[in-house]
Image (tube, rainbow, N blue to C red; front, side):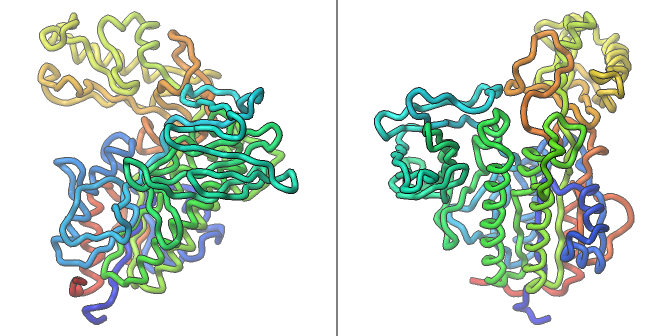
Length: 507
């Protein structure tokens, strides 16, 4: 290998589930990933703490003080590093991006507000439960879904299409179909949006909230996920077919951009594929017959499998340039069937005067001398936490078929010294459950367990990491046992050391 040759491609794939991956590899559905594991191997990966995305990505990308920053580590080692679609991270010398500004896609599609534009007299489709959806009524043929963004509508020639003028772009969109992404200038810089025509008569159009974007050679690209789509799908505004099409299109665009970056032949390509995570959040129920949203009458290829096959295609393309590959995710996914309100449980068990849950999964005692409302003596604190943990571990599912809490992790050290934002204990739930959110409404104040009303059918937050392992695939034979996510940077170092000397950096 010469000093100018590419060495390795490192692909971060949020949500890549070890169990699904192993099954589909055995079924022969992912041939390029199978070639990687045949040369090296597949290992499960677990984060050290909660399975929420911010904490996990900060651990390896360098957005927190105690992280082992992978981009900085690669740059400092003298590698010529090209990064594409990395989650938010600290800037690093020697690490460049082909997109300007560098993208910072969100790890999970957020519950941001969305807007449906309606002809006067039309009603919003679906059954809103998130509380973040809104409508805009057409005045004549013009509506304003978001401040400063206008949409003009006119019927197509065949009655099955709509002629739209969105952000100054004229487009023809079929009923039950998506427009292309369009880019426009705003006070915040380049933004992108698109829309779906839900009905031509009466006119009903869903418009994606404007978001940061870039007008790349492959066309306009969203850089921060697809805000609003998760809430709109949860409310039934967008059906499974529309969401599948949206995610497939985004995945194709991401693959095109990453492949084009690989064509520049940097010594190390550091890329993130942000399309597996939202597919699992939205459409996990296509894999789970126990889900409320599972429909046995539908037999399409599950959207989650489509996303994994898209990753497989990307790995095949990168293999043509890079002799070594490492594909990694800190967590997988599980079904979401019910939400848990720990404060309601504390009230029902007459413990709310002694403890509370600030965020739905952490427990904080009302400790005398530490908290303003403290009434629990320091000498009784640990015994009380042990009692709460024991009783929580016996909390049964709604139908009594299993347990809700996997374990309760009690903090070490002097509880009186814990900062106001630090919990005294952390509750880890079993598959099917997570802490209740504001957007999970409606749920009565005193309901401990409630069936999820959202069409979000997959999740990983709040679970015991044991139940949602990610996966690490390498072209080098791996050491035995699972991968500790915090040690990913060291694993990359080993991979690159085996790949050969550091090539000269491009200038």
